[in-house]
Image (cartoon, rainbow, N blue to C red):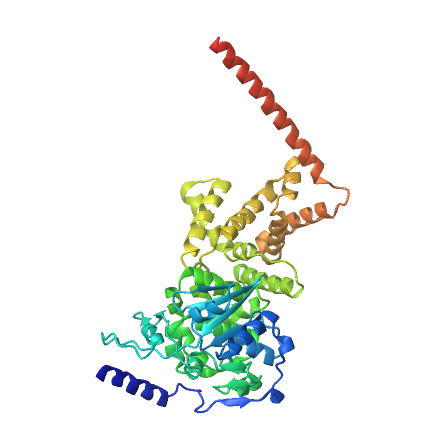
Length: 474
């Protein structure tokens, strides 16, 4: 009983000392005073909201989708917060699966759309007094775990909507759309910050960054996406705490990199990340190439992100393989030169070994899946083949599945090359451009003709070998 009383006293003290920016009493913004309409919410999200509500649970749209709807943007996905536990959510939906180890979540699947349902998060209770008494069934999981840097390793802590709001990262994400009466519950003056165009952290920014260093990347991404400025309290600690990203699993950083560089704001994110020393943590192999913005390597990085943003705006296809091929091109060249000088390897062998080395080092920070790293290597290999190709080899290159990506990469190199390399690269790019513009040129028949003799020779050779073998056996 004494332990329970101490826990209750501690929770009361925590609630009395609310995090910075959290209002003592949330603002309720009625339907007639905000722009969110149910017609802007996806049908699957509405189904989940209404079923939770009709089953007696609280149900709110929360976070980025509410923020984006207020700003007139189309949310990429719809997240829901509720007081129902993940197990209770699963009982309501047959199309539900539970995911997550650090924090348990319910994913309700509607075809290609997934509605993420999270139970309200509560405050941390890192002290385990060894007792087996629980305040309620949820209290059994209310123990979180942090590492020596303050990063949360386990976060399965359930609570109330008020506690959940205090656990949010930015004020603009502490907005809850209530399906019960269509009002918005604002716990941290997020509406005011949206109107002012400022991104502020809930609570002490250094502490929140240490809990989850990815919040530094999210700060940059939100600032560029929403056209907001970082509050001084948000921006100031980032450069000092940037090395904490080294503690994040490479697989998670891969997902964050895709969000940063494949959503149409790649160039703006790149420049802010470099300024706050975050890009150097994501791509340590590129540190030495970021000190001279006027040099070819830096210009190639800028042009890569600019081209990617243009393709996203034009609704053209992009692939992370091309992005990683461009980002790691200069470290690849440096390693190839080193191998050529030290071991005297020919260019093809030097490229293959250098590619394995460079990708092997990069995946220690960002886990690039093989479905992207292998095509990136093909793009690099095709640069050499496009330089040497003659006769029938030209035909086979033009029909290569990765030719278009390799050709675009050649244009990128020609555009951002050093003065010494620019002219030959431009000539090579013009050659392949004119070749494709030649409407009379048809590589398919030549490629087909090239394949037929080899098959016939293989069959004749096989018959001769079998005949000789039979004679010997006789």
